[in-house]
Length: 533
Image 1 (cartoon, one colour):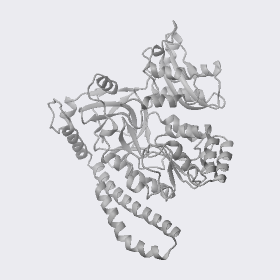
Image 2 (cartoon, rainbow, N blue to C red):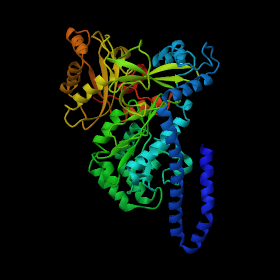
Image 3 (cartoon, rainbow, N blue to C red):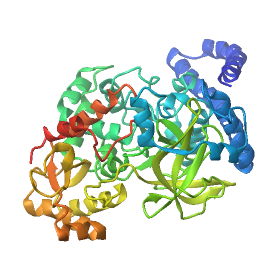
């Protein structure tokens, strides 16, 4: 389809070439360049809107005929299986498929990977029509909600990675965006954005990436201001450098709007482990701005697309096409393994775990990502991401889930004067051999803004909040079977170092899955070495 779009764009430009030649003879060089840029933007946007309209028609058909769309996705999975001895190979019967292929947990898939078997689903398997559809429809939805954001020069990206699942290099420059993915380093992109006070949209690969950008901006503000003042890159802008220094001197809260007074929306790609970064950005640097994610990514692949930028919390439409997605009912924080998987039959208000079929190994993998159905689009569920089942703590069989722990931690941090949580990670004491004869417990590492030291009273508040949130944990604490949670404050940049270590893994995908519970000792020790209080 991209080839057809390119041909259409070329034909339009050839059609307009005589007109450009005539106008070029009658106007000044500067006016001619401005008019040409405007024309390129309009042509590129028309082509993009045409492609999005075509994708919207396909979306309407697939979400109205869910059974047919799932059947086609299943056929694609079965045809893509390579070197597999399976009695259902070539069959397209849904019941046979589910009966012969049992569900596999993500942890089991990781064990197979370590044993040399085929890896679990990753992003490069699904960089197809789903990613393109999410990008095109996301752009149209963003333009409808914030028309000025997509005007020429209205948006800048500040990270080498893009939040759009399938970046389209050919209209990017004409639409006034930054260079294609990976073309520039973060510092150069940030400097280019800082030179443009008229920005209305800010893009970053993920919310965690954007958090790192603002932390860098504060720590290296004077260096960046000096570069802008002397013209690195571009012409010298001493006045803009002075504006940057003044904005930084006023603190973190509302910094983005002081730097870019017309800024309206921040675009990042949503995935597990991003909620705390979004909360920190919204409370501090990006206060007063809307956040929009064009898609939800799990295991590196697009699971759902966002058609509603105006919603304060991300809502995602689960697609019935490839990749082949199923929903497994969840009850009281655990899977109903005997329950059948669903999609169109999912009920509003219920929670389900995402199940993704790997078309190479033909493995039905429970991803651990739990979503809640909040509505429907035609006959397909619209969901909101809730938490991850595999990010639970358990030292005595208590199973403290990610959602329960995060709520308790947020409540505790709210009682620490002046503190704002930037990131956190947990470790079961057995991983670090830190029990030392005492009862097993949780080791909690937090990165904060506004608090440089943790008192014992503040540390104890987390354990009290955990007991209030979980009756089972409270019972174990009362009996002494579980010791009090130990809280450690790490220095700024500790979790960035953790993310860099995770990204360096050969099997890592984008966006990287951000763990809240660390299962490997070397990762836990990485945080332990950066404890400051």
